[in-house]
Image (cartoon, rainbow, N blue to C red):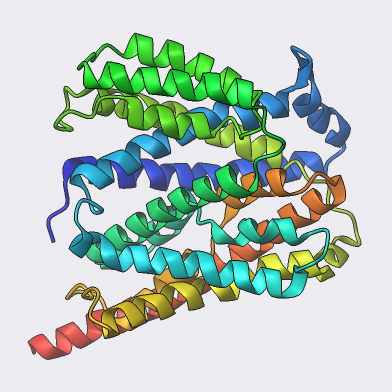
Amino acid sequence: MKITKLFKDFLESEKIGGFLLILCTIISLIFANSIFSSEYIHIWHNDIGGKPLEYWINDGLMAIFFLLIGLELEREIYIGELSNFKKASLPIFAAIGGMIVPAALYLFLNYGTETQSGAGIPMATDIAFALGILSLLGNKVPTSLKVFLTALAVIDDLGAILVIAIFYTKDLDFFNLSIALGIFGFLLILNRLKVRNLIPYLVLGVFMWYFMLNSGVHATITGVLLAFAIPFGNGDKKSTSYLLQNALHKPVTWIILPLFALANTAITINSDWHYALTHHYTIGIALGLIVGKPIGISLFSYLSVKNKFCKLPEDLNWKTIIGVSFLGGIGFTMSIFITLLAFSDSEHITNSKIMILVSSIIAALIGLLYLKSTLKKDCLEDVLNDD
């Protein structure tokens, strides 16, 4: 299977981002549980313009992260793995299963309780973390499997964005929302008029973010809307979309996501931390990520192929699909982000973060060990067949 230079660059960027996220999380947990704990946690609560630093990271900088997701999603839809139904159908069905089953398992335990709003938490996949773990297997990983996981995670991100927009919107302020959507409409007109200069899009994008922030809809949605307003053209290296996407990769990988990880994993772990894992909502998160994700991804993939809606790539088999489905259970960034929207109680947020970290590590280890064993057997069988 041919793999483009842009996709290679994307994979490399996501791998680095995954390892950086792991490193920042370890550093954050160490400082949050050291003699510098209060000083370290206070850093993220420092007041800037009437809001804590953590707020500006989660509601401001993460909008840039969502802008990058939107640009990547746009590229995949226009010329990438999602550009036609035949190529996109398998990861689409897999992603749908990977969202429905975890949410259903969570709701089974939490429906009708004050924590039922957390159903979106186990639906997400952290693309950087997942690809970072997959890269540990080296050259044994078929290209089709990398493409499958990437497309699955991109569609998963789209699902998470829709969940945030529909289910985690607070009281709507229609005046501010109308202005934000009006700006979006004007940006679409600029696109149709073939205005290629980035400056008006970025300046108006900031205003759109401000009014969206005050509308009740989560401000990070602005990033996705802005991405689809920016001209794509033919998607080559001179296109406006490509130039912005290329410019954003390093800041997002090296600054924004590490800051998000540092700020949101500053968790003080007490000696009785394991009790945090015994609540219905934390058990729901664990079941969703560790059990629901692999079942949903594998089952929906199998049913879609069995019913001839799509075809399994020649260099993949059901063992590798099952293995990568466990990597889909690495929620991390998106799961933590949705936690901050789902809950307002600090105890619920802290306990959920702990469970997300534990569940993501377990899912990563299971997926890594299973794929290592499976791919090793496949390589051995290929050698024997050649002989």
